[in-house]
Image (tube, rainbow, N blue to C red; front, side):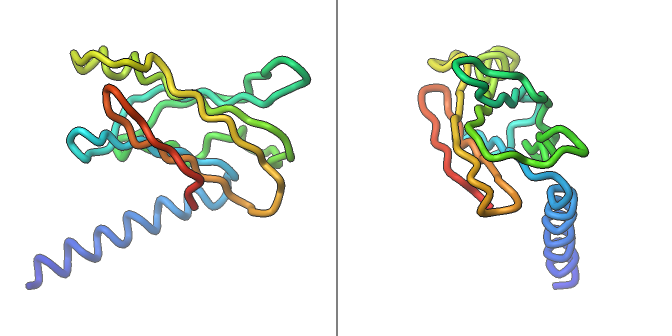
Length: 136
C-alpha cells in the first residue's frame, strides 16, 4: 500500500511540475504513440506563424522523454493573435524506430484568439493515422 501511495504521489508531482513549466510559456505540445500507448520522445516539432501568404518560423524543439515540449513559443515573447502551424516531423521519428509511416509530417494549423493564456496541442499518433485536439 505504501508503494502505491508513493507511486501515486510521484505521478501527481510529475504532472504538476509539467504544468508549472508550461505555465510560463503560452504553447506546449505532447505526442503519444497509439500503437503502444507510450509517449514519443525525440520528435522534432516546428512552430510557424502565418504572415500574409507565407509562414514565418518562430521556434522548433524536440519532445522530451514524456513526449512533451513544455515551452514551444519563443521565450520572453507574448503570444499574439493569429494563425499558427505546429508541424510534427513524424516520418523521421518512425524511421528512427524502423517503422513505416504514411505521414512524413503532421501539420496542425490553429487560430490564437487571445481568449486563453495557454494553448496545448496534443498529437495521438500511429503509422497510418493521427488525431489532435485543443488540449489544456
